[in-house]
Picture (cartoon, rainbow, N blue to C red):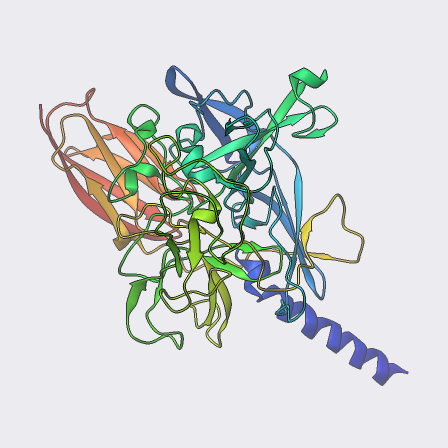
Length: 464
């Protein structure tokens, strides 16, 4: 009996250790320093502190699942939403269930639903391309909107194209939550708006960090995003879909075996060559949509795209089996695709259907025995990945981390006499800090960067 008990204990310990090293357990941005969320409101470029926790609050795990408890609010500043969206992002107290050992679905595939399809590593929900609105033939115009109907379900609107004005600098926005359930009813139904579920439909980097900006919201409401694109490095693991397969940023290894250098990972979906919307790409004759024009440009609807196998790097689900830094033996991965200008490229994260068996999702409680994950102290941030621009400057200096910040990065500015002038922090799940130089004298300064026991110095020049 004693030998058998020791054997069982050894197996349980081994299982626990194995689970803790699984990236689906260890890759989350757990808020250990009381970082709080912040947001802008329209007309005020000074952020408001929400007094709500940002990022992930805790991670628990069992033999087969990771459970991620998160507010759904990121560390980067969010808002405003300039399309009239009435909601503000709120603490949703999410619990996301992620399978630790995902399996390919060889049967009937599962379509990605309206709402969350996964979660980013900072606990912000991940959505697909759709916003729940489609073309209404009977009215001859787009039906609905954030509070309206859904149209006829034939030509399905692409949220990235149709709602661009409503995304904040970090390319996110909230879906309204009314008393009685998310999105239910609305003011016309006698329900009260009580909050919002902040989410990203696309690669979670800031508009002003793209090579070509497709929104000017960052001009007044500076923010950043979960990570910054670095074309020389494999993009970080940015989240998990609810089938348990990981999601990576825009760049990966050129070859699936991890060789060939780094390249932008490209979608295999292409815009169709059409001027009228009368048929789908597979030839199906459907209710006519609007003609392609300035109001309804090509790409405004999902059905404006067609999948052309091998035209890009990814399959119909927007993924591939490949080697990554976190999975050196290879795993199926989705990629948050962008074009050559780093603008979001359809299908953005996950295709219209999941690759794997969907055994995870958003849950109300944990109904099995779990352990709480304790983060293992890292070796520290690679400080050489900082970019300072413009330098010299007479206005505002941006200190940008290339990649993803996983530990606090402390920034302290000193004058040449060694006096501290100001200090800033780049928090996990954020990438950038701004220094307003207008209140500082012209001259040379030393910026000291510290993270996890490492220190680096940079010279900053302020002109007037």
